Image 1 (cartoon, rainbow, N blue to C red):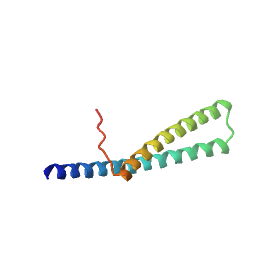
Image 2: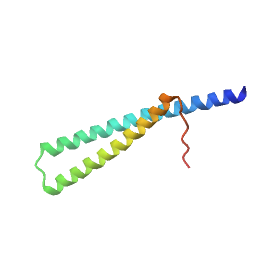
Image 3: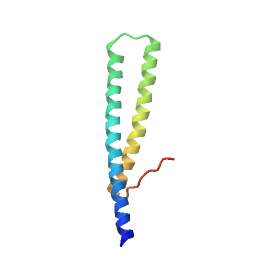
Image 4: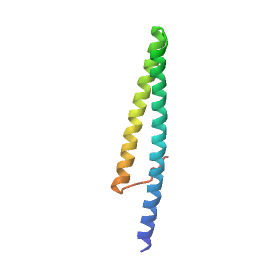
Length: 92
């Protein structure tokens, strides 16, 4: 009986932890998308040299890659929550 309660407790803690992570990831992704919009506006609204345009393109590409990676992580976390298989991620 106690093992069952302990396992339920662990599952609840893991679910809360992963739900918190999902919220943090969503907020981070939203902020990065806003930055991406700012880069797009800057790119189209001003006359830029080739070097400046290249720098903005590089920043945009880095943001797109970061957003894609965070989207993948968010999908994985949400999938585990939806499947009822949350787990606590241990960082060493």
